[in-house]
Image (cartoon, rainbow, N blue to C red; front, side, top):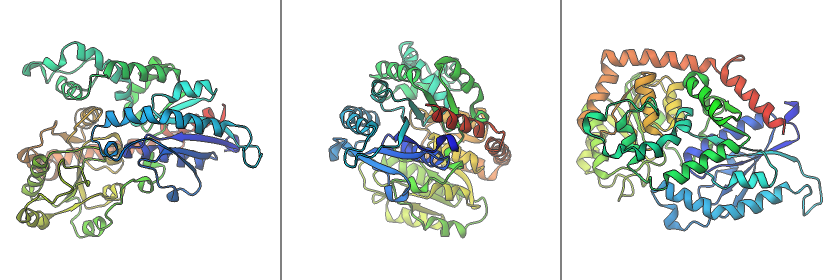
Length: 455
């Protein structure tokens, strides 16, 4: 604690929900260890400063139009943000590093380092030019982060032309993915893959450290390999929400009626369904999900984010007679307090897109999963759930009512589900031990504190 007093850390999250949450969580952790926190953020998706009165928030312009803010193309959005934010961020950071306050003439608190998201492409050379140590936070699992750099090679090797008979084969260069998973990853927005990943790799190796919201118990082999390959300090400090609740950093307002509704349901009976803050689906896919849930005859809590169904505002296209059938067993909301939902005794399963945060939140609450991954790292996370940890059922992108109904029945009603519940309870306990005094996550966090204090 003593070494961190008098030190300030600058954090710069990428303005996406799945990136803001872990960055604000990290800010809370560092603040609890004595660091002062300044968060530089964009106007777009600005975090709620009022929820974090002990932090200093500084907004910079991002130059996005209303149309660009509403785009569903994440890579395009990130590209525009990188182009538009470089100059304002440089000006802001340079001013913060000046030894005296320009208005009062008072000496400023010393800035120890910059911590930003791996999606920012300009921060490493800028930090080097300002002689400021820069660490970055990855929102991916260690396995995906270190293995993603092989994707251009796999693309050149013709994975997009795979025969059906080959698609179930394991990918030796990217375990535990199967070739059909690589096919889905490479099938979208990969024309800039080579230069993008080349730059990410160079920035990784030039940084002062890499932080993961994971732990040895979830990804031990990949952590060892990443330390050898990148040759920089790596800190796996454990799932972020295990330190502090994340609800105060949500960009959306959760529907608090979820909890009273869950209170009325039987223990371990409800299927919770949420596809996160970025996934968009077609109207026809929503109907398949709805009918799969309803036909399973299990109670369900379904999150349909406003704007997540392409071409609609919310669920207004669902026929009234279908809504009536839904209301017999289920509840639809625009957003849910996910951690509170997963902790609730009525939840028996989680149908998820397998973003990393959702995946580890489910593990930490011992809620077995039905995996419906859509993009990028979600395919790998789903394989860990179904094939490595064996704590869920992978639908492999099959958004079909019968497949969904059968998966729910397998998980909630059959012996297979009982075995899965036993395994995820053991995994929860294993991860929990990493936060104990001599646990891997606790030790890694202390190493991170010492590392930042040494600059």
